[in-house]
Length: 155
Image (cartoon, rainbow, N blue to C red; front, side, top):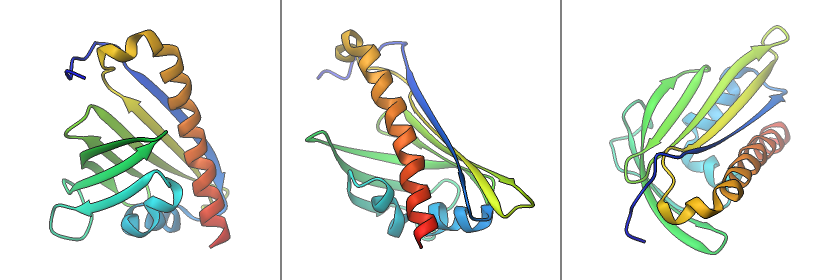
C-alpha cells in the first residue's frame, strides 16, 4: 500500500528432530541453499545471489515468491553464518528475519532444527488481521521444518 508500518510484529517457530548430523543438515540448508531452498519453500519462484559466490556472511540474495497468489520480491542479507550451528538472514527491502538453529543430539547422529520466522514490523493495513497473520506465520514455520525433515531424510 503506502509502506506504512506499525510497531507490532509477528513471529513463528517450528522445531523438529532430523535424523542427520548437524553438518549434513547445515550443508543442505546453507551450502546448497540455491538448489534446495525452493524445494522446502515451493513459494520461491526466483532466487539470485547478488554477491560474489559462495553464500556466506553478508551475502545478498534476491528472491521472488508467490504466496497465496500474491507476488512479492525481496532482498535479504546473511547476518549469521556459523557452520553446523546457525544461519540467519534478514530482509533488506522488507522487515523480516529467518533463523535456522542446529543443535546436535544423541551423540551428534541427529539434529534438533529450530526455524524462526519474524515479521519485524506489520504494515498498517495488516493490523486488523494481526491474529490471522500470527497464525499464518506460526503455521508456516511448522510447515518449513516438516518440509525440511521430509526432504533431508529422503535424500
